[in-house]
Length: 169
Image (cartoon, rainbow, N blue to C red; front, side, top):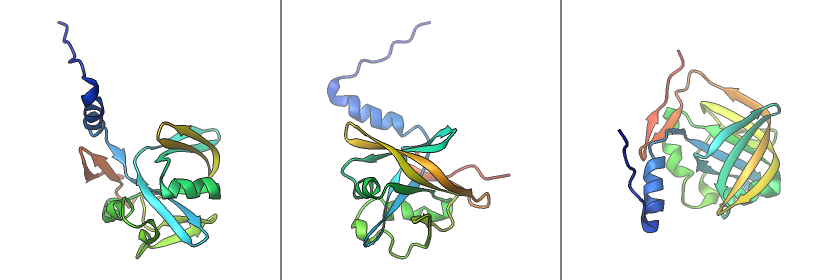
């Protein structure tokens, strides 16, 4: 039996795509870097391990993002995969004044990059390549440090809400 897919009108493609992508669970991360005046960061879900040889990450951030611009200048960044217990940080790092996103947030500088305390996963990278793609920057980072905490349940974004991810057994 053949099932036909509905044709999309150009006006609805972006809305349909947004709804479709909401069905793909993804980890919630905060991408961070340093500036001359202190740490900056933003939430991101378009983050993945790119290669194991050499260990590297790919991060996609809006090109006009305050954080992305500082990462380009600094040449390094940290990927902080939030734990379920840190779900409130999703909103704190998603909007508002970028200079106040770190207010009250415990972190440590590792290789000069802010790594949030109590995350499920932390990775520090140096920038290997930056590629402009449409309205985003694709940041390829070579891993220079990583750690994970099996006692912290990862935070997952799915269907427009955050959920606890799988627990370590």
